[in-house]
Each structure stands twice: as C-alpha cells, then as structure tokens.
Image (tube, rainbow, N blue to C red; front, side, top):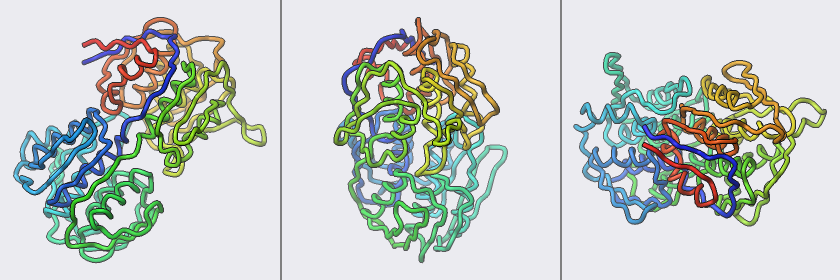
Length: 435
C-alpha cells in the first residue's frame, strides 16, 4: 500500500492541463466491443481504473495498440467468450467498478455476458437495478449465483422497446444504449442520464453507424442497426479533475491556470465554486484562478443560509462535493452540503475535523461547514483514503495544512488522477510517494 507525505503551505503557481475524462474513457473503451473493426480513441488517461479495464479487454481477446501515451486503437475481432467464465476474469471484475459497463456491449454482440459484483469506491450502495431493468426490457434474462456473486445475462435477440428509468443512472444508461444500438427495432429511453460522458458515448456510437436521436436530453430514441463499423473519437478533459484543480487553486494557489478545460462542457461546476466566493476567470478555453487571500460564501437572495447539493446533470456532480467541502473550511461564512446520492461519502469529514475544520456532520448525507476565513490553519494529520474523491479532498486539505501530513492507500487516488504528485510538484507542491 503506497502513501503520500505532504508538506503543507506551498503555493501552486503556473499552468496545468487536465487528463482525459475517466468516466467517459471507461464507457467508450467498452463500446469498442460492439464492432469487429478498429476503433481509435484519443485522450485516454493513464490511470489505474482505465489501465485495468484495457488489460481486461486484452485478456478477453481484444487487440489493443498504444499509438501514443494517450492514443489507443482497439479491435475486437477475436474475442474469446470462454474467458468470461474464468475465475481470473471474475476476480478482476470484482476490483474494477467499470467492468459493469461490459454487460451491454457483450450482450448486444455475443448474446451473453458474465459479470461479477463490481468493486470500486467504499461510498455506500451503488445500485445495479437500472442496468438489469433496462436490459431485461430489451429481452435479456438474468441468473444470479449468490455463492460466487456472479451475474449471467443471456439473450437470443434483443428487441427495442419503451422504458422509463426510475433513476438517471449514468452507467445504467450507458449499458442500455450500448445494448440498444444493435437491438431489433426502436428503443426509447426516458429519464436517461444526459451527462457529457453519455453525450460523448452517443457521438462515438453515431460515428460507428448507430442511429441515436435526443443526444444531450433525457429522452433518447435509438433505432437498432445490424452492425457497427470502426471510428475515431477524442475524450473530453476530465471535469472532476478540473474542479479539483480549482479547489487546489482556491486553497493554496498563487495564481494557477487550468488549460484546455472544454469550458462549455463544465456545466454548473464553475458557478458552484463562485458560490463559495472563489474568483475564477474564463480565458478562451482556459480557467485562471488568481491568488485569493479571502473568499466569502454567498447567501441566497433573501439572505438565507447557502445550501450546495448534488443532482443529476445538469446539476452539480456528486464527485466534487468532497472537494467543495474542503474549500469551504477556509472560506468566510457557513454552508450546508447535501450529498444525496451516496450515503457514506461524507464520512471522511471526521479527518478534516481532526485537522481543525469546523464541520457538523448532521447525518450520512448532510454536513454544515463553518469557514475559518484563513484565521485558523488546518493541522497536519495521518489519514487513509477511502475512495478517489475523498482522497483528493484529503490531499488538498494536507497541502494547505501546517506541518507534514500522511495519506495512506493512495492507490485510491491513482484510480482517478494521473501522476498527481508529479504534476502538482511541478507547480510548487511538496508531495513524496512512499511504498
């Protein structure tokens, strides 16, 4: 288990470019299974979750060529269905949340998928009901082996239908789309997730020959086709990494520019930081965050207490709530954070409280932060990262704290952030990895 030693109090200056979007990468890489032709994907981030998924595809029989550090070519013309039954495959699935995205394309193209209960972050229940409901509506049949925690999904022929999802699950929507593009007839998916990652998946599939209407809305109409062809695709910058860098710049920035952020795809993220008083400037497709001695949390127009809550797109992504909480600890004012989607994601705040933050954890979903206005600095502590986003929030807190902090289990951070210590050290941070 690797750890970070972080010497706090060093300002970040200069510029940094975000990696390709992790969540989009997991989806579009799985979509390459839908054709026997070559699919080229640029902007692939060099992070643990994505690298593990690519290796999983290699093991299945997909030909993978790395054309450059961020540019890959995939060809699924010799997939080995027997490997899907192996213990090795199932073991790998249990450690990789993104493996759930194999269900849709494997079922659509080969009529069968075997998926183990996926792993990932320890942030509470992450339901698979939407995946199963959508694929069942298309004609799939499920069998569950409780002893092995194994799902087997089969379908002789998928058929288009109308479905209304009970939640706008991002990965559930992605699986349904990837299955429906090769189904017979027309599928209508209402209450579909419409995050930029889903939009990008639809654009890739359209380039491959799929027929999808309603992209960027929550109602998708998919006319099934007999087969898909090869295509090329470029992944968007990671909006969660962009938000993380904004948080770092607010807390310890001496003037930081985030380059090539695809600003128009960030949605409400810049505004969420502005509500906490963080000043940022759009410069073409870059964001500049000046050094800020103070930033004051806004109140609502009637003077009432500010509340920041996550919501499905175009609302605020839950993946940035942890970062926003850390930023609020040094703001002037108070704010209530409401994390609606995962019941265990706020439990990391006990470490921030130990560092000196003034936070009241109301329940598993709500926390009130009373900002220090930089009058009291956070204190260095030893912590353990429970998930990707809490891990990066702890790292931001440690960078602003007095003294040297230690974060254990940083493999969680590696799952979502590429060479993070090297990139931040180049801006002035003092972070050392120890094994």
